Figure (tube, rainbow, N blue to C red):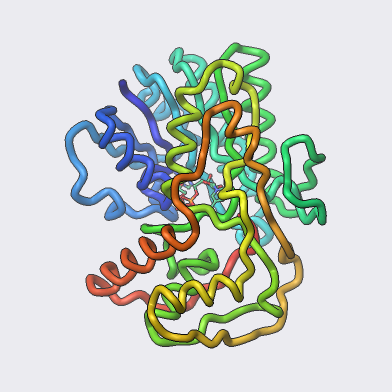
Length: 326
Ligand code: NAD
């Protein structure tokens, strides 16, 4: 089977590519390397074809989609802060880019598009857990653009019978996540600070909570979404771990993993941060057979080990700013 992974040199994409190659698929990657890194796919060969280019380039898309059965569309500008700084750029890549991917998948006769959406479409609702029946309320241009992508997916299933499945990821973490990005997520930032012997910076009281989801669970959900029965098509569903953890609890668990007590450094709360987040994952369980295989402690242990190995290869500067909800 030939599959296309847009955004395949990024954090989630490169982990997905590894899994797909391991399962014997021929994988094409389309990525402009704007936030992804070619070295994320180092050491992989056999059935891997990397095309450096933009998902908004219709001609290029037509050539890379040709002959593929499944398109995993992960390419995006994945940052809330960046979308606030430049909403048009975010819309262009995330919404228009998704429309173009769907058009080319339709025209090439691909069977299914799996789309990376985001828990941010729910906004800061106090109702927990967040379930798909709740009204959406995107608060940032990033969230609005991811929701627009979902709407395009659904509309292509209805209008053109192209199968689509949108997955709303909740705070994904794990190996190959970039801790040095200005927009880095909280776990790679904490792990990087802890491994450098620094106190992890906590904005606010640390009681804010997230449904941290290990990358292996997310990769598993992507693969299941590509293979699930037609009932899943045209739907958007949550992919989380299904439990929430506060930042202070996270620091405690990290301390147990590295074998010492970690003292957080508190900083003023950041306006606009979502307070709590938790996924109801029953729809994904029912429609695609998703069951998270790795818990937080196990995922964090693998992440710390990977970052330790990576640090031995290259020193990573700690200059990150955490993203609330992506
Ligand atoms: P990432 O930045 O590591 O990956 C995004 C990839 O898209 C990068 O490789 C980047 O180079 C590529 N890209 C960006 N613009 C492109 C363009 N115009 N053409 C081609 N390639 C382009 O981020 P990630 O965390 O791996 O996110 C992957 C997807 O998952 C995104 O769609 C993001 O919105 C979604 N998501 C991620 C999280 C999370 O917690 N990481 C949560 C919710 C949703």
